[in-house]
Amino acid sequence: MKIESITFQHLSMPLVSPFETSFGRETDRECILITIHSEGLIGYGECVASRDPGYNYETTGTALHILKEFITPLIIGKDIKGALDFQERVSGIRGHHLAKAGVEMALWDLLGKREGKSLRELLGGVREKVEVGVSIGIQPSAQNLVKSVTDYVKQGYARIKIKIKPGRDVDDASAVRKEFPDLRLQVDANSAYTMQDARILTPLDRLNLLLIEQPLFEDDIWDHHKLQEQFETPICLDESIITPRHARYAIEMKACRIINIKAGRLGGLSQAVMVHDLCKNVSMPVWCGGMLETGVGRASNIALASLSNFILPGDISASDRYYVRDITNERFILNSDSTIDVPRGAGLGVTIDEDVLKEFTLSKISFSSKA
Ligand code: OSB
Ligand code: MG
Image (cartoon, rainbow, N blue to C red; front, side, top):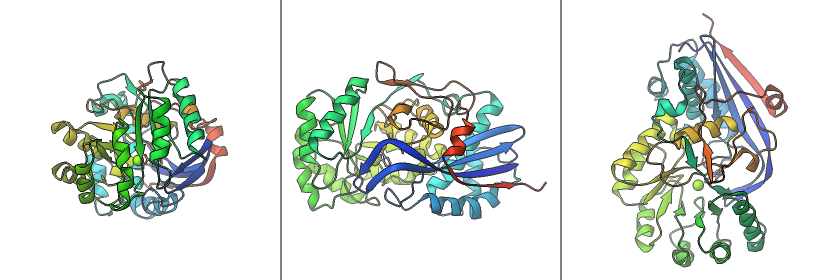
């Protein structure tokens, strides 16, 4: 695929409601839309970096820098064979996985459009609809949280994740569990605890949670192993798993029993599939995480979640849970069985609403090949 031009659009999308985690609160979500023109086709990708370096070290600012100054020169005007060829070309750039993954997504979209295959088909997905859940941010109070959970359960979500942080953990989770004794419930700490204060979380073990996500440092694997030994509830790693190699470390160290797969964090869909396969080989369940994606990244997540070892419901919700107006013409809706249909169109299977895109664009820059 000859890369004739590449465009980066820095977006700020107003969220339906603020999203608060242990590392901060967002009312508008920033991201970067990547558009690649190649041989008469247009591929779209979403870089899921946020405005602040709270989830990991990348931001929309660092991602734009890496995309413009380092990734673009390696691919513009070049004939890129596919995701692995792309990974090879950018292998000299250390880290910056969110930036790389956004471009890889656009390449998959192009590849699918060229071959007339959906991303699900290209990746080897086995499901036509995927089980989903909702990730609820920290609310003003436990009471507010229970109300929010109630609303989402009424809408049809059969799995709920709640964000926790020190001071807002056991009581919040217990309040939800009390109201919903049988709900598939999990918690996500986003690295907010040290080994010492993780002791506070011991009562969570009696709440029949699906998992406890990333309690300790974002670069830790070993202490999660020690913590897992103290808990019956599976520990799930998100932030710590940044390469297939880290997934192997976590498996070998018994640092977790479940992995949250995000293509962005791993540097691309190709790497996400590798982690999926590694986990499948050792019968470790995985699920698809989310980064409040627009319809572009959401289409990618849903296709990824159709792979066979995505056994647990993903952090993939309907479009209306995030945005009143999205940049794709297609909106994702929740089926009555808490699933979302996997897109069938070629590539990501989505098209762009140019008016909405324009409205939410903060800046735009394009590079074209000279040849
Ligand atoms: O840790 O899973 C996370 C959103 C932004 C950054 C990190 C995380 C999240 C979510 C949102 O939990 C999941 C979603 O997209 O619905
Ligand atoms: Mg997480």
